[in-house]
Structure formats: structure tokens, C-alpha cells
Image (cartoon, rainbow, N blue to C red; front, top):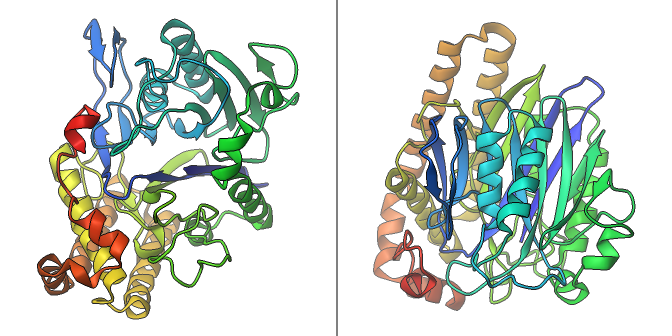
Amino acid sequence: MCDTLYKRFASGDSFFLKNSDRSPNEPNLLLQVPARLSQGKIDATYLTIDDHDSYATLLYKPSWIWGAEMGLNEKGVAIGNEAVWTKAKGKKTERLLGMDLLRLGLERGGTAKEALDVILALLKQYGQGGNAGFDRAFYYDNSFLISDPNGSYVLETAGKNWAYKAIKEQANISNRLSLKKDYEASSERGDFKDRNIDPFFSFFSGSEVRRRTGQELLSAMQELSLDEAFDLLRHHHKGKNSGSLYGGGSLKSLCMHAWFLGDQTTGSFAVFYLKGVPYAWATGSSDPCLSLYKPVAFGRATAPSFADEKAAFAYWLTREWVNRAVYSGLIDEKDFKAKEGALQDRFLEAFYSWLNVDRSEDGYFSLCDRCAEEDERFYASFSDKVDVLKQNDALLPRYWQFKTAKLGTNVFERKLKDRK
């Protein structure tokens, strides 16, 4: 379960936002991947495919998958994907995952439209399919929101069929098909959604509520504000579980909390296009409502982004233990959020100061370094609470006891049987 959102404002500035909802024990790693020349062939998650020269990319990816849930390339193209449930057959056949298609679109597309065309060509050549679940089998098709400084596209697929639409002002996608006859182009005639949607799984994903919520929140924003964008990604559905997020999550929340049904937001990513220049911010951790968004310098491995997967995993895991200490009550949630909120405000103030006064590359690198250092000190201050939890996970709600017993194990294994 995920949500991806885009909005372009009257000023010409725009943003791309995505929450990646995965298994709560599945690390979501933020990696700096340099450009490369074609190696002839390259290994995706399940297939070996023809390689091409690639752009440098910033990839937000599940630890065991070659592809990514979301990312940005050096040309300013950002892509997010969503699981969608369709009537298409053959999902269990190992082909390209939607996340592989996303990474390849970023590596090979210099504009949003080029990235879209790359994905369509690969879909036609290789198809999509294979297990995409971390600790259980999980099969689905994919939709994509693809943006660059000049605009955005929504692309929806069902097997090898597809439809896409150019976006002028705003759009958001969730875990369901949405394009009917309003597409710009399609591989088949008629109503794409009605022809292809699986209504049962689409309904129970809670995606229609999240899609409507996203639309409403986007429509309410009249000018680009970083902190309002972060609040959007931290949004919780005002349902019966809204008072006990760590003891009963909701599939209807943009900031999703796992329970016996549903996934967890294990990574959150934002790209702000300001006067045509993309600026990336990311949590590098689960639970946007308990996380700090930090600026990311593209092509420079400063936390929360890394050149090494194991370093990115260690960063994610440290923050995951702190989050679970909040779930247990060892860390007071209200006090934690107050301190974190003050720190987030300082990060934003420093960014706006740099944007309005400095704008030098060295100044931005320094800003990112300072934010990373303050973030590290903040989380280190809770190490004693984490030590207590590691010795007594019975302090957690029962569901989280079960999950925490396996936290951090076998996270890079490619085969499902080796991760369970």
C-alpha cells in the first residue's frame, strides 16, 4: 500500500511526494547510485536484461530488491510506483517487478515523458510479474507517477496493457486503477479502469479513501510549503484507530501503521521543484509522523542517503528501534514529537535561509551535513531506552513483539524462503 502525489502551483513551482508502505520489518534504503556505462547485461530482481548507459540516481529501495519504490535522477525526473490489483493473468511469473521498471525509467529517462516511454518499452519486451513481498508472497501490477521540472504523468498498467495521462495541476495515485476514458493514450480502447480493475482487492486496500484524502489535501494547498507537504505525508485517517496507531493501524491513512492487516510506511520521500531545480528531502526511516525529513544533496552520500547498502540499513535500523521504543512507551510520544518538531523547524529555517541568501553548492552541502549531524545526535540520545527494549520486547504490543523478534534478519536475501 502506498501513495504518490504531485502538485504544480501558479508560481510554476511543484512537488512530488511519496510514502512507501511495505512490511514493517522491510528496510527501505536511500542510496546514491552513480551513472554508469552499459555493461551489456544487468541483473534486475529476477531477470537478466539488456543494459544501457545510465543517469546517476537517488534510489529509495527495499533492501532485497534491485529496483526502487521511488527516486530521482540527475536530470530531475522523479518516479513513484503503486501496487494495483487487476484482472491480468500471470502475475506469479518472474519478470520485471514494478520497482525494477521504476529504476530503469530513472536510469534511462532524461525527462518524465522519456522515462514513461522507457517503462512502456520494457513492459512490452519483458512484462511484469514475480513476488514483491518481503515476508509473504505478494503479487500485483503497477501504476506510476512520473514527474520532472516541467510536468507529470500518471501511468497505469494491467499486465502488458497500459494507459497514461499528462497532469497539468495535481494528481495522486494509490492502490487502484483510476484512469477511465480520460487517458491521453492507451494500449486498448474503452474504459481502462473498468476493463482491468480487480474490485475486491482494490476495495479492501483502503485505497479509495486514501486517494480522496490525497485529492482534498492537495486541493487545499494554495502555495508550495515544505512543512505543509511533510504534514500531508504524515496524515492519519480520523477513524476508529486514530487514537492507537501502534496498537491497530489503518489502511486508510497516508502515514500507514502496520497491524495484523496492512503495511507500514517504511520510507518517505519528497522532491520540491523550485524555479526548475529539484531539491530532495527524505526520512531514511519508517513512520513519517515519528521521523525527521532531511535535505539530500544529490550525488553526495550524506545521511540519510548512502553509497553502501549496509550503511543505509544500519541507519534505518537505528531509527526503527527508536520508533519501537515509542510504541512500547519507553519513550514518551508527546515529548518525542515536540523535540523532533522543533528540530524539523530548524532544518526548514536553515534551508529557506540558504535558498534566499546563499544558494551556493558548498552552502547546501554544509546545510545537509549539519542536518545529518543534528539528526544523529537526536537519535543517539535515546540509546538507553533502546537498550532496555532490546532486553525486554514484552514491553511492546503483542503484534510488535512478534515482528521485533525478527527485526533486522536476512534483509538482503533475494529469495522469499531465505527471508522468512
